[in-house]
Length: 141
Image 1 (cartoon, one colour):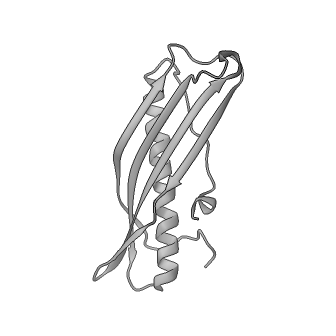
Image 2 (cartoon, one colour):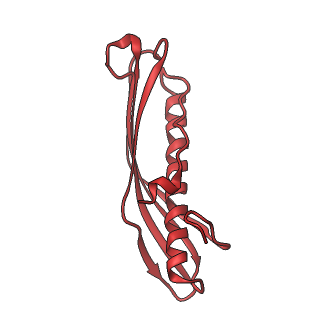
Image 3 (cartoon, helix red, strand yellow):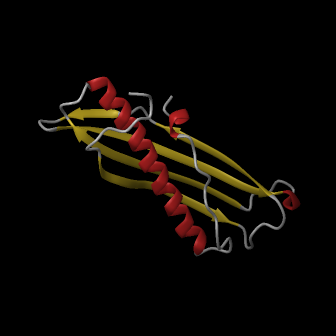
């Protein structure tokens, strides 16, 4: 199995929002804007149960949006921390299962953060904002 491959039977157990901070200027940025994005992941912890293996990973997303016309002052800043829990049937090779669980927990955690940020931004002066997609295999570390 290649890194980032998915295993049959994986299931999202939970995504827990543990911290969320969203700060936005009084108006949406004008002109071109640059986003600075940092995604950090914790080491994945694993628990082997009778019938499955559970992987838990913390995903932290930090972003800042700055327009060229605002002299470096951020139009938007955010920090969101989630914990994603994914399980897979326990009768699969331990190494491959762990890689797949880590990949899936990072992917699910980041997808949750993207959705969370879209919802918050919709109720702000920004009106619309979507975090970019990321290559989860790069975040696997």
